[in-house]
Length: 170
Image 1 (cartoon, helix red, strand yellow):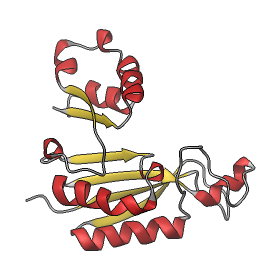
Image 2 (cartoon, one colour):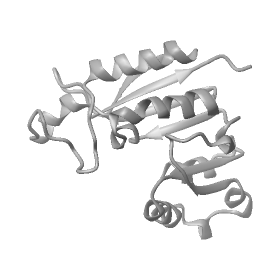
Image 3 (tube, one colour):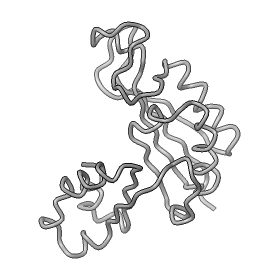
Image 4 (cartoon, helix red, strand yellow):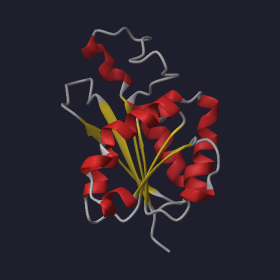
């Protein structure tokens, strides 16, 4: 859905969707519905297999990288590799990271140790996410703004948390 929205927006000249799963890439291709895009819209979209934990020089030079519900699918010991590849090697001007807010899981009837998806390796509380994001920003020369996504409930926050990392353009 995001790749399609960006493809339709004339402000974006190149959109690359990356996923580790060939099945998810095929699903993204179907949802993109390329037959309903103009030639110029189709030409600016590339879908490719890859992982945020490995350096990919083809991703260097982009204005932004958006990691939507990605980090929680990584083993925690792979977060340093994500940091090195995205914030170090690719080094975009902006990075957006969204991830579930573990505290909000109570609103879904989940227990304190239950995760929202069987493939999630962890889910952060708001304090844990803030600590990670602020650490990455400090180490990599970015500023970070933290936001909630979705309806906010007292004591639980929002279902999704978002970090917007920015650095001055060269």
